[in-house]
Length: 231
Image (cartoon, rainbow, N blue to C red):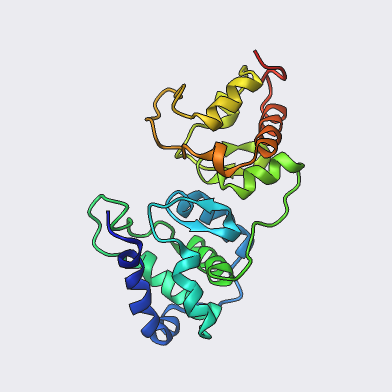
């Protein structure tokens, strides 16, 4: 797998041509919806990219905060970053089926593309960025902060990820202990049709015990039919 520096290098090269890219791309239009762009980013891009404000932590592709932090600190504005991101999406390196090396062309297009690039341009590499507060209590915040919606569909969270199981479908009937184990040891019991090692294996290390308990309670409460007690 290429080192992150090699993955990020095309972004640096594109930054040198950013003024041309921005002029050609029509970025910075007033029609872009950054809130919608965030939702699309989590669903379409968060399965591969880390970005703090989106709450995504995937490490398949470049960390977008790392990729754009230097450009932003050197004075590159949001519209310049929008242009770079648009070029990367529309003209990625030749696709070879390995997401660690390249990404598919046109992951998003049209208005979806405008919304995503406006969102990424506004938050990527911003110091201290973090996910916005969400309704639904502390468990909902844990769900959002850790990018769970990028992989899972959950109606209560308004998420539509499809990399992992639809939580509205697989959690009803499960006890709290089962839900907690699926977070802390996801390979212990795999949902039908999903391979091992898709879900991060270290949530028990990166999420506090209290937050995991809050997350489990939130999931139980918002998937009808789940059992509220362990066992």
